[in-house]
Length: 126
Picture 1 (cartoon, rainbow, N blue to C red):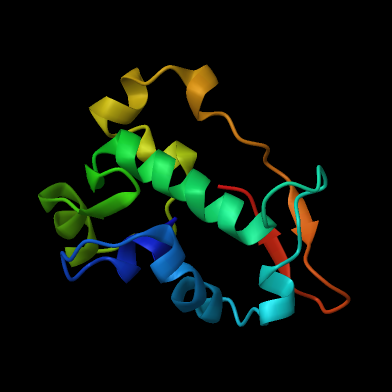
Picture 2 (picture 1 turned 90 degrees about the vertical axis):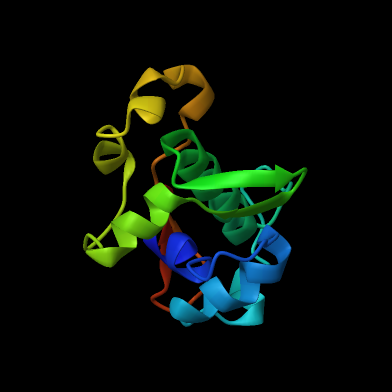
């Protein structure tokens, strides 16, 4: 989740689609790896994980939605990046009241490692 938050640190409005290549590049993912589908065959796995990261960051108040599909970093998110943690995960986000109060069923995502290709690149769920 930290790479997504860092990608929006300038305060501008973004869509996930606009950030997909930038964040994927941080993990050295190829275009082919970014197109790997979820086991259900639905959406691309990487985009799905970005969407979950966005959901968790939003519930914690680190990003806010400007309009449908468009979001930006909040003052709370900017404050966090002044002294960024080594990672942001669901346990870390529990310190934020909005996240701790959010219904857990709405926030659950599969926590599993998924191999993206024949390379040694793995992507972990939020």
